[in-house]
Length: 192
Image 1 (cartoon, rainbow, N blue to C red):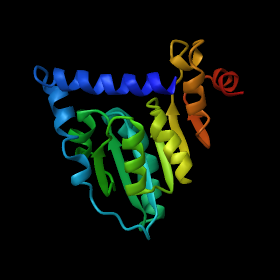
Image 2 (image 1 turned 120 degrees about the vertical axis):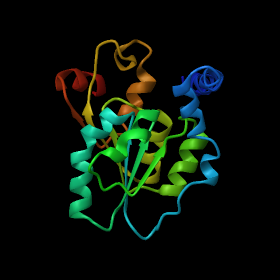
Image 3 (image 1 turned 135 degrees about the vertical axis):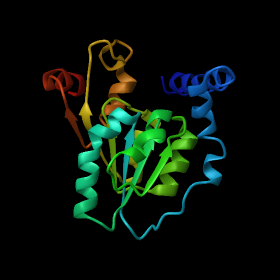
């Protein structure tokens, strides 16, 4: 299943590249990731780093109170936020925040996940709501980062609940804790 997942991610990226020729949002998505690893900001490895991943602006808004609390209680920590969607990158600055670094998250390939984690090496990783990028989750776990998911939403139609969802359920098991918005009984049966 891992091979099919990774192939799907690569095909998704290729589709977005083609779509960027005709679609403004896809164009921003592609442009935001161009020369990504050549333009990464340097980080002080002596300082703790907390990484929040948000799909877009709505997820950023959900995670913002926790981000600000982390930063106010630990002013020396580096707060990294990544977005999948251009809406997050374009509008997060309009919020009252204490983010040190904001970036797009590259596609969820094994090599991207490894390079990203090697560069930033977060102490704590927080995924907001329902973006579960398996390669990033597994690489974060392998690196020793504590993994949390906040405001998670699970629905019966998600892959986790399907006959083919074993691989995705394993990804969820990488989290140290998942804070959910809806029925926890559903999640318990999923993970145990």
